Image (cartoon, rainbow, N blue to C red; front, side, top):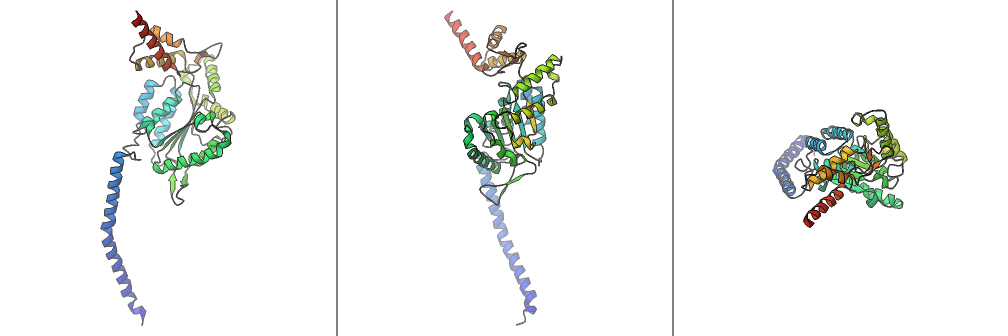
Length: 347
């Protein structure tokens, strides 16, 4: 048989069959697609999903809240809000946003990270896409650093698979084992796609995530630099980021803790080293006033002064800055209110 004569017929027949099959299966595939979308919609009515309903940044509102409630941290406010705007408004940022917050305790580091989560996710810091790690409690042992690395890697990959706009906060970095944060380098690097540890064929976009590191490392350097500016007759509000950023990065790299000789610093993958300045008396008074008002009490000057009496200022001999910022003031205010109410009842 001469197959050459029948070849055009076979080709036409094959194409006709393919068209018929495509025509037959097309409505079925479309139906399956619609069902899948419907199931996803139903699921997202009951569970958090990585959609605009659950992940909808409101940086304008964050800006307003920080303006009202973050005292004495003009540098922080400016840097953080602008960094978030730049990152979150880009549909395809070149890398994940990484910010390292440094400063004395009680200056707002934890507060601002919680506020970012609140105005990024519908569920705030209860979101499935928000992850908080504490160096002291989550990674206590230096000898287990390799186990911690593997666990941390899996947590990050899993979260990024669920939502590229995941947020990771690392508190008390100065208490973390040395070398732990090196595992973050591929997640913080430029133009990175990571292969899934579970499905080798799938990849994860790492560039839309946010990483925030909280540490007391560099506190003394920040305080001494601010004090030097004060001695030069310069007001606090004219201090700028360049006055502190290099001090922080060098200090973090050389002080014991999670950033000690870390590849994250050595590879220049931290976008912003943000200095939280020590608080002065005027700022502590604002914290006290808010603490009283949060408990439904309008404080008198006498009550504010009583609260202020519990605050230690330093360094000597100038004693300009609260050594613990506004930390523990809530408990002091609660005790003052209770004592005064008890005294009234006794009278």
